[in-house]
Length: 157
Image 1 (spheres, helix red, strand yellow):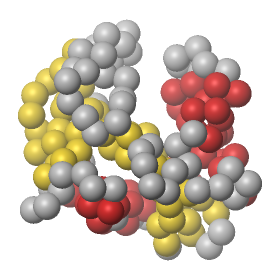
Image 2 (spheres, rainbow, N blue to C red; image 1 turned 90 degrees about the vertical axis):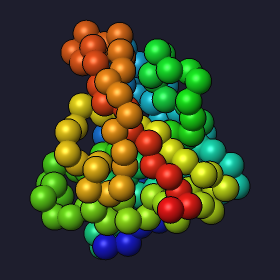
Image 3 (cartoon, rainbow, N blue to C red; image 1 turned 60 degrees about the horizontal axis):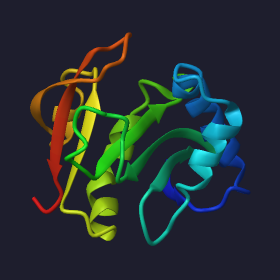
C-alpha cells in the first residue's frame, strides 16, 4: 500500500474518489456529481490547501483523506484547519487502510506548515488510536447526526 498526494484530475483514481464523495455526501447534501467533482478538482493542490491524499493498493484507490481550511461544521467557524473526508472503500475495510492513512497525516500536515488539525465525526474510539484528543460534542445542524465529536491533533508532538 502506498499513500500519494493526488495532484492530477487525469489520474484514474480521481474519478473513483469523486464517486465515493458523491455517494457519501453529495447525494445527502443535494449536490450534483458535477459539483462534487468540481470541489474535488480544486483540492488537487501541491503548495496550498486543500490537499487530497489517496491510499493505493496496487493501482486501485482504497481510501482517502483531505487537509482543508474549511469543513461543514457551521457551529464552529472559529477553528481550522481540518482533516476531512476520511474514507475507506467498503471492499478494503478491515485491511488497515485507515491506519496507514492516519500514519501519514502528521507528516503531510507538517509539510503544509500546519501546527494543528481538527476533525468532527460520529466515531467514538477510532481517532483516539492515532493521537487525536476529544474536545467536545458539537452541534452539526444535520438531521441524521445533530451532534458529533470534535477532535484536535497537535502536529509537532
